[in-house]
Image (cartoon, rainbow, N blue to C red):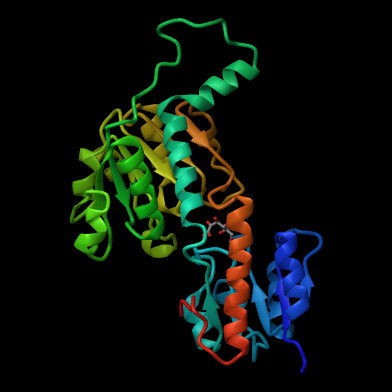
Amino acid sequence: MVKPRVLVTRRWPAAVEARLSEQFDAQLNLSDKPLAPEDLRAALRKYDAILPTVTDKIGAPALEVDKPQTRILANYGVGYSHIDLEQAGRQGIVVTNTPDVLSECTADLAMTLMLMVARRAGEGERELRAGRWTGWRPTHLVGTKVTGKTLGIVGYGRIGQEMAKRAHHGFGMRILAYNLHPVAPEVLARCDATQVDSIDELLPQCDFVSLHCPGGEANRHLINAHRLNLMRPNAYLINTARGEVIDEMALSHALSFESIGGAALDVFDGEPNINPTLKNSGRLVMLPHLGSATREAREAMGFRVLDNLEDFFAGRDPRDRVN
Ligand code: 8YV
């Protein structure tokens, strides 16, 4: 039997690449550079499956290829706002993602960010490495206690719930949850979480707000100047979701006017380019999109893509189909 032709757009963990190459006629991107839009369009004419990541912008223009050869875009990642699902559907292309397998690691990173910004760990590390530390003193880099505080979670799905678990059971935090669709009472009960009806209702009540909703146009600037204003002046904003969810100009203003306590971001609008105004703020922790960056999660994501491909090419509906 002829093996399906599969394009992997970036380097993946070795064990996953090895299995992919056994099962498929796999083309690996040895340069590990993001594909140019014209290469993506050419790939749609050539490969039965493309395995993209967040760095492949597969919007409507990229997908406007006459009679594409590609029948499945098996995304390496849970978020798929970089792919135009409707246009893919119109072209008869199935899109899948990799839920569950990165939820714990992404929540671990959101906890890391929350602790780093509250305890001023980034500022401290920068000071120490620059040789500016003059020694212990009672008023040095005094931060905010995390234990027992109120955490608002925007997007109470798989990752949001993992975040709640860590914060509530590990740090005794009170959990407020906002979700587009109502959350089942038994799910809320696991962390004694209270569901609120709107983000505007959630924000003024929180010491920390962590974003776990999808990105994309629907949620672009969900956190805007008005909503930043609703946050307490000593509250912190955490983002491991997608950069576009926050209006970054409004966030830089809020940070420079100290209308919020601080922010910690793992994702950026237009990443890897960072809005220069963000870099001026001391009370901002920034990480380079590390949410799922563990050996365990990255391997599991790859094997989950393989599961979806196996289903698809065996004529079954892939388990993680999103369109
Ligand atoms: C992925 C992520 O590593 O899965 C996601 O949605 O944000 C990341 O953790 C990245 O998107 C790979 O495509």
